[in-house]
Amino acid sequence: MTYPNLASDRQFAKSKMPRNTLEVKSDGCTGFKYDITCELGNKYKLFAYFNGSRYRVMVVDPIVERGPVGHESHVLTDGSLCLEPTVQGCRTLEQVFCEVGALGQRLFDLQTHQ
Image 1 (cartoon, rainbow, N blue to C red):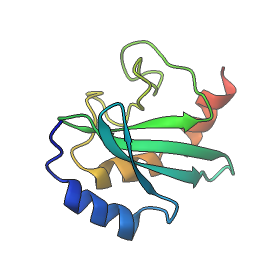
Image 2: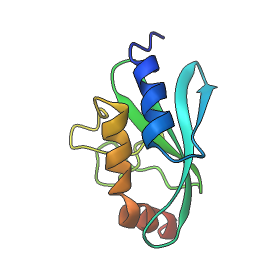
Image 3: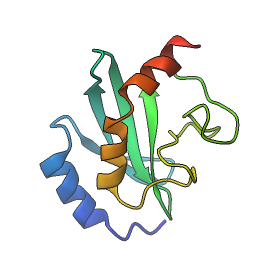
């Protein structure tokens, strides 16, 4: 898969994402794995990646329940988070990273409703 913005995404990850961010390859995708702690004190391992057309992010740990097609559940059937109404993903790594920052309460709700 072609990753047209990899150089600029590497720079963004190095300068703006958490210090624990690692570039990894998984299932043919290059992405960035990092840990966050939400405002409620819950810890999450996330993987932000480019799927060939848009950026998405998955919760690696803890396991969260996947929902039906649509954005009502906030976790799509492929395991990626619904970050915007079209459920296609974000246009940039920076946008996906900022959207995840706003997910604290929703991630907590997903984790506690398993």
